[in-house]
Image (tube, rainbow, N blue to C red; front, top):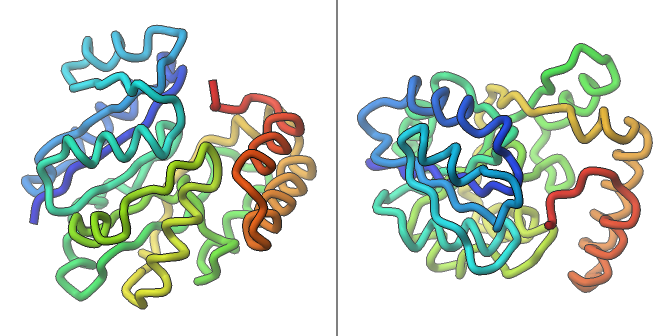
Length: 232
């Protein structure tokens, strides 16, 4: 089984090299490539990626969904592993994914914790052990077998909630598994805003998604409510 790691980026010049080196250090022979797809950053993210010795494609369209779909089309692996630029999977990630797929998983993710000791963020993290759509999200990383990704048409061309849309479809197949280990996620969004504000906004956007709000409505609400968005 071959794993292609796909990382969407936007203005991650200060952080991306550390993540790439981490993923490479703890990869094993199952990891055949690490691909970065940049969303037209206005810092020098692509340069930092290439200086570190990795491949970087600049997407003609901004947005994580478009970027990850481009990465999937370029990838050679039979398992896609989507990792956000501010998420660090466990050091055992390659072995974990291969083991889960061999045991019947078509897709799955980790739980997560934050790189912060604040107890309120620990509360957030605790809920990710539960198999509920509201407890999921792209920050937990996502592995998926290539043929399943292609059967489902990849990520829907959303600028927001693209991960929930795909995970919803994957959970309906009954072969989505949560690995009982934690990816470590940056707390910077909470630091730039506040714990209560971010959680309130996340709840509002999830409810909008759940009840069928349009992408443009959700995006407008999110961009106007939160600081430090990654939509360009």
